[in-house]
Image (cartoon, rainbow, N blue to C red; front, side, top):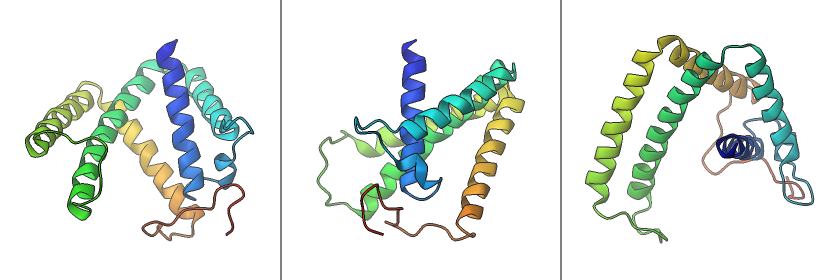
Length: 160
C-alpha cells in the first residue's frame, strides 16, 4: 500500500510540474485549496487504471522499471551539469567525494538499466516507446518549439 501511495503521489507531482512547465496541459498545474494537484492526481489514477485493466502487469512493471532506472541516470547527469554550470551555488547538502560517487552511481545504474532491458526487452521497448510518444506529443502541443531555459507556464494566479 505504501509503495502504491508513493507511486501515485510522485507521479501526480511530476504531472503537475510538467503542466506548470507547459509541457503537459495547463489544467494539470491547478491545485485545490488544500494544495493537492487534483487534476494531475486524477489523470494519473485514470492512466494507471487503464494500464492495469489491460492485464499486462508484468510488461507494465518491466517498462516502468526501465524508465525509473533511466530517470535515476538522468537526474545524476543533471547534478553533474548543475555542478559545472553553477559551481558557487549554495547547496544545503554536500556529497563527499562527488566525482567518484557520481561515477560509481552512473556505472551501477547504467549496468542495471542494461540488465533490466536485457531481462525484459519488450517491457523496456514499450517504456522507451511511450516516453518517445509523450515527448512527441509534448512538442506537438507546443508547435514543435522546445521550452527555453527557465521558461514555464504561469502558475494559477500568476500573470502571463
